[in-house]
Length: 154
Image (cartoon, rainbow, N blue to C red; front, side):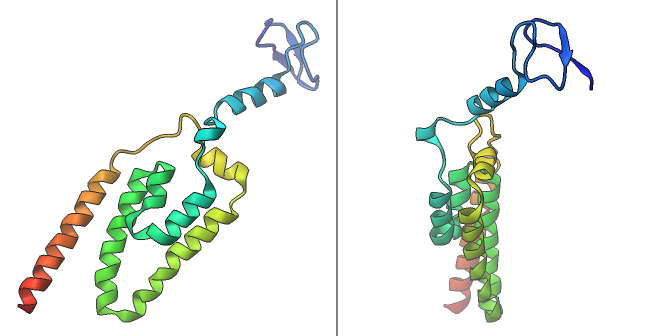
């Protein structure tokens, strides 16, 4: 049993007490209110169902990561998709890589809503700007290989 300082009145009270006996400040209730304020409003929240479908159908473009605000990961998905397409054209067994977006979609759909909200629906969640670099790099690589492929087969 320790004494903690009240954030409202500054007096000490027991950490076992529900609220400050002097002013009635409840640290647990204050923490819950602060946590509720840290989330995006209901009408602007990202949906795990939408993210899962974007992953399933537009995984090669990293659409689900752009939707979730992870531009770096979206760029990495695009880059990985470009590289894996060329590798899979050489080694056809690697077309099993198509299972990756299915697994990722199921992971998003089965994630508990509280965990999804705390990860993707926070007001001050960091936004990465480097994803556009990976997008341009991926497109340049696709262009290079397409040019080399058509020049080689003419």
